Image (cartoon, rainbow, N blue to C red):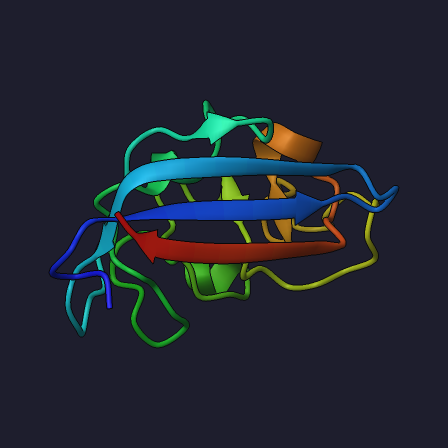
Length: 131
C-alpha cells in the first residue's frame, strides 16, 4: 500500500498518565516483501525524533525468525524496524504503563524513548495516508 506511492505516517502516543504526543513523518514508504524496508525522514511533532523512529530508516522489518542483522527482535520480543535496536519500539512487549521496561537496557518494551524515555506507554496508533 505504500511501496509505490509516497505517504506520510503519523504516530499518536499515550503515556500512563494520559499525556499524549504525536510525530508526523513525511515521505514514508515501505519496501516490498519480504523485507518491508522502512524509508522515512525525520519526524516533526511533539513526541520528538532525535531518538525516535527515523533512527530505523533503511532497516528491514525484523521478526523472531527473520533477524539476521542485530538480533534485536529476539532480544526485545517484538517485530519492528530495529535500527539502533529500539529507540522506538511500538510493537514491543506490552507491560504495565509507566513502569520502566525490565530489559537489560530498557528498550525492549512498548516504548518511544524521545517521548517517555524507557517508561512503558499505554497506547499508540500508527496511521498513514497517501500524499
